[in-house]
Length: 141
Image (spheres, rainbow, N blue to C red):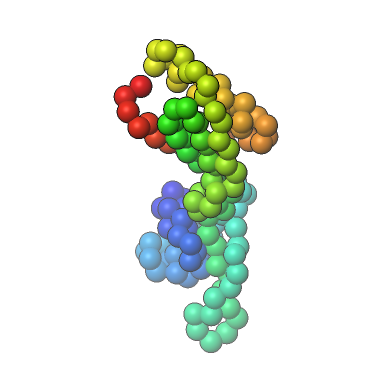
């Protein structure tokens, strides 16, 4: 199932038959994996594609909204956040002024964590949906 999910993490997606060929898996194995991934809400149909004569095949791909990534830019006196889906599409952005940040690095990072948590709470994004947090620092903290 992991290999199927990894393959569907492509903007073009893939049909069942394409997954069979790329991954050297049987149709029942691919069908079962797609069914499981759909039940988990990780993938979904995004259209159809004609591979041969006959009915067009359903194209599946990762649901980019199932998890989010957060970017943090700490360039005092400014603190910026960006929230994006798994396709790197920005969903929300915020910039806050840090008038006088804490003097020690641990306190400063706690402050950033508190601000980020407050922002995510305001957006109603639970931490369980956050797949990754990247932090950019212009200098040593």
